[in-house]
Image (cartoon, rainbow, N blue to C red; front, top):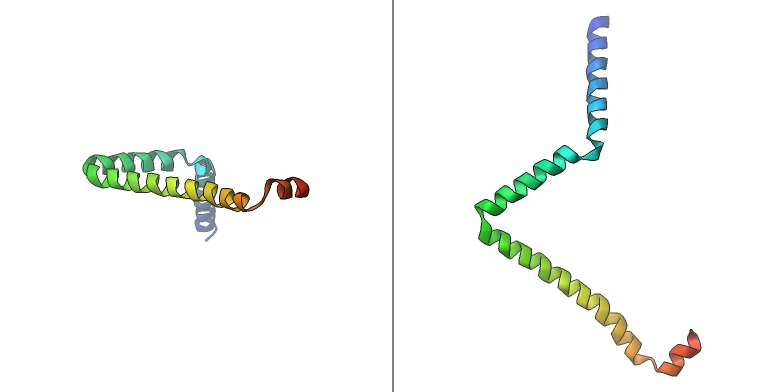
Length: 85
């Protein structure tokens, strides 16, 4: 039983050190990038639509994030803004 326990502990230690080595995520990131490009090559139309949808969403968020404060600022007179600054 002692040998079996030592073997389990050494496997556990090896697994922990392996995980510690992978904290950089380089292998996982590389595999994800490969998988992404493989999907783009297999389905280019879907990839184009997905990329355009993400880009449109980002543009929408940026426009809203800049429009709402500008709209609020337009309601306040310049003298009031200077008075409270």
